[in-house]
Image 1 (cartoon, rainbow, N blue to C red):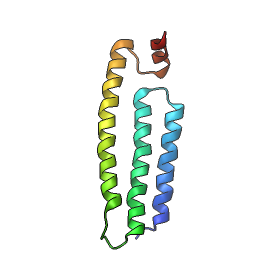
Image 2: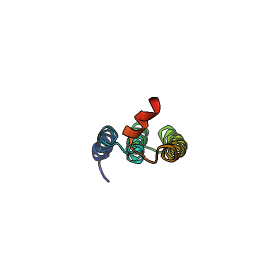
Image 3: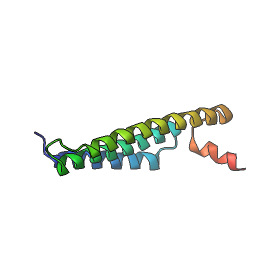
Length: 104
């Protein structure tokens, strides 16, 4: 069995890769993927903390919360992609710098 610490390290790595990608990318799709990485790291932590706190499979609060979070993440992704498609139709670009023109 793999120790829980390895999962925490992997989750932290996913989280920081997502934050780095969100801060450094200017493409809207790449930023959306970075947000999804962050959410997946959080979901992994929910399931892992549930496994550590309740090791005998009696309580599944962390798993149910993770499933709820995955559902919310899917809805957020659908809305974000719809917004990105509309932005692309109006500006013919998916770069964040071009969206700044919308303010003017």
